[in-house]
Image 1 (cartoon, rainbow, N blue to C red):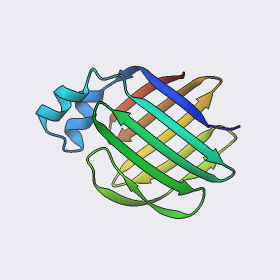
Image 2: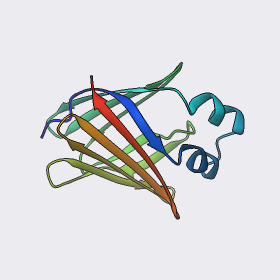
Image 3: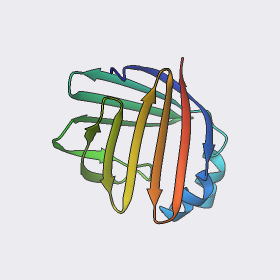
Image 4: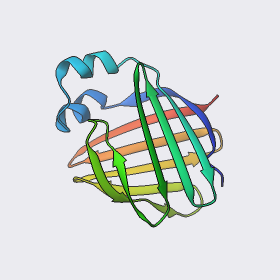
Length: 127
């Protein structure tokens, strides 16, 4: 399954609790909570490029499945991680105690990030 496309945030759950748990300031949490960000994914075989635009903040991450890479987290920190493909439609990685799963079903991407007992979930639709 090819992940390539642009996806706009439709809904999210536990944004504030999760962002507070990873250390984002209350000011940044308030600024970011209502923005309908856009993610663009370009997949070329096992190589992926994610561009996530939330207001004026842009995060770009590139990786090749199964190879160690450096990812920028939502706090701006650079972390080393390995992204794996589970099945045909699920990207999975872990860093700094966070498990991140991105699952594509049709035109909907479900992204979950779990830290302890806090599960941050985002639903985005292909545009």
